[in-house]
Image 1: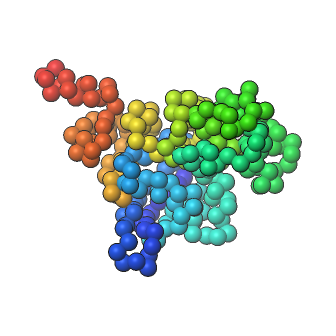
Image 2: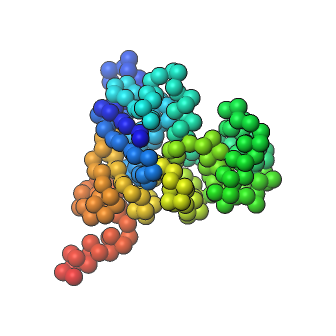
Image 3: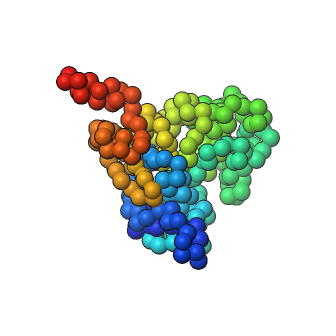
Length: 250
């Protein structure tokens, strides 16, 4: 599992006035879970994702990925192989001129055998529904297709956990994530501010001003309509409808 213990973070610890981005976060994510992190821009959710992947290191507290501490230089590459990150803008993540070369990039750098790389690339592209595009140029694809290629590149490194920061091309990407979670048992950590996306997860974690303020199943979290709205967030449209009908006595 991913275990986050008493985690606090700010970007400049030498500056006493630096803003505390995260404040005493405690969170456990079990293998096979689909967890949605919700919150406004600036709530700290993207920073938390980078701390899970080891791109940032805790100022206080610890982040453990399958027992490996992100503060350990010896374990950081194993952590990044175990918890793969797909960034908000796929153009910042794509490096090759052909889709299949892009997907092969990660396992090649891990020293995986060529025959195994071929198998992983074909499987990953199949998993994200991009097998027919393996000879295409990534920069000519749509935003959603690029995002799926970026996901395939992470899948080819065989991670247990996949972290996605505000993915583009949402409908097709969400279909891919549900499939990976339900059929392949991949752990998904999805950062989003779209309530309908969060509603299909196993668990929703709501962040506000660097703190966790709500955590539970989508039903448990979104049923607290007044609290969600008090945080300046919306609820899924069907929840909103039920809420308004109940207010009118139905």
